[in-house]
Length: 311
Image 1 (tube, helix red, strand yellow):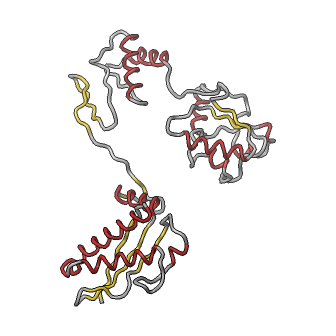
Image 2 (cartoon, one colour):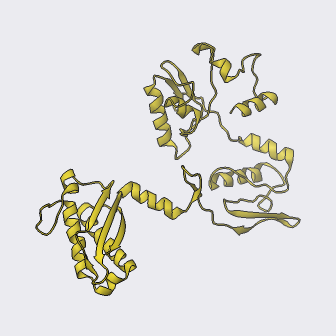
Image 3 (cartoon, one colour):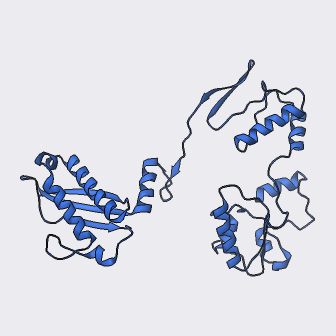
């Protein structure tokens, strides 16, 4: 933001009186009524300056009672929830908020039709590629140029989408390839790229929690040794007694865990020796049986991690 303002002033696009454009450190020495801060974050971005100020995370500065916050931007579709949360935090801090819905304060970042006409007539490009916005906006850009600027038709106005490879040569401009684009996920702690399967697994953990199942078997006779051990993490829908009850088969305990252990033991008893001998098949069968039991009893789909211990 600071760099953009400096460039705008140098180019004469923003005109400020002498001494009115000052540094952040100089601004802190002024009274609140004598300074206006131009900051980022009108769309509720949680890493922008406005969000940090609204939530008391910005170093050395925060929104206080009596401050006026002008959100000079329209809500971009999809950002409604974030902006609503931002406005809520601002009101909690006692700020007065002026927004586009209440006042005409929106400053468009997009060119008007007249701006487009001036740019095209000045540059007179051989080929025009409308950019920015949804496809319907690109199409209207194309139609406006065709209908209002002589010399442009479907032949030299090309509509492209993300993933299209545009080739321009002496014969024309055309889309020659289409590439499938995928989202790139970055791990917050390591800053490394992670696969979508990992993200999907994390989503499942967030929504359904996790269950750890440990089963001990006799590797010679392929029979169950002791009780299956089940641990719950973040699984909803259970009372505390149901989580902690122990024992099965008449040994006390009639909660969810006790019944789950009994269901696993019954599943092992029904399996053939060769199914238990193959650890991969055995683990998957146990996971499926426990998954079905949990879905039946709780209606949830937690991640189930199965461990086989041979003795």
